[in-house]
Image 1: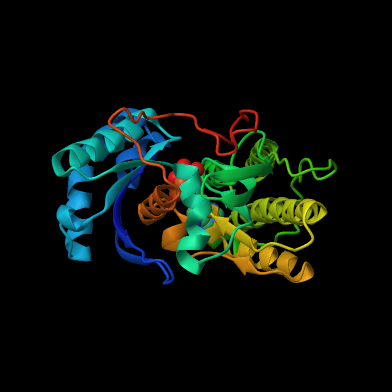
Image 2 (image 1 turned 90 degrees about the vertical axis):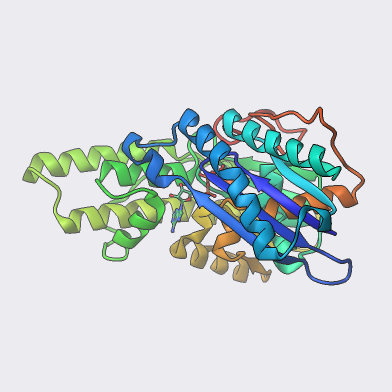
Length: 356
Ligand code: ATP
Ligand code: FE
């Protein structure tokens, strides 16, 4: 099967071609990602209307480039997969419209994909991980533990009840005058800092289960920053590095401890320890990766972090999730709709901040 994938649910416009023959590893023939960071730079966050317009402008170009790099034309494809939610509705609509146009023009089947399923199925694209496995999805908009049981079967063990960690990294960078996206710039500063100087809260660790909370962390950081500024009339370089290190350590410790709980919870349901896979932009954080590796060592299980380009938003994961859905007999028609909210776990209550 050869699928074209389209992604436009947040601030990256992406198109990719993925090929898969049963019994062989899937191949990413092309993966084009056009970011919009500079378009939103002056606004301190993604502006939905600007994002939607940019997606509309860039989708065709990305598709053309993805096909050209893969050496394919539409007639070589088997279907078109597109993110149909969750996300910023204008962007999702732009992607769905583009996919419908391509499908109508070529007669190719259309497969709508849940963006979160795209992230959650990435370990199968990169490493052919067998179901079931445990997934920590940790990005700019999401943070949740999922048991992946099948292409469309996920159960949620818990997640953030307020902010996502990526969002917390971005806000912290903003508070400290560091460039966006916040994750990489805070991580860079943290390398020069002492993580023990400021002890930031690790919320909900005293409570059982896998739920997390990150909004208090930002308030605590703001308080320390204001105290330091009041003390010396500004922020010394070392203060900033120490704040970043302390902040990163708090996020890492919460995610590591909750991963331990998720693995234990899984073990209480099944006798075999699952692979723990991570996806989402925050999975790029080295301190977090090392902590999660250590957790997996304790549990004597495999830790899997896909290459960074496939951890952050991309269309290869959408093409792949489309292939998985298609194989499971799922195809959509021209009535495919864009969904701003779309929880992966149908049994889960809609959770604040974690389902977008
Ligand atoms: P979603 O996938 O939930 O719709 P998104 O598109 O914002 O949201 P991603 O593209 O997966 O998410 O990730 C972007 C987020 O990852 C940003 O918030 C960014 O700050 C964070 N991030 C990137 N690199 C790092 C890093 N090294 N350390 C921590 N966070 C990081
Ligand atoms: Fe994403």
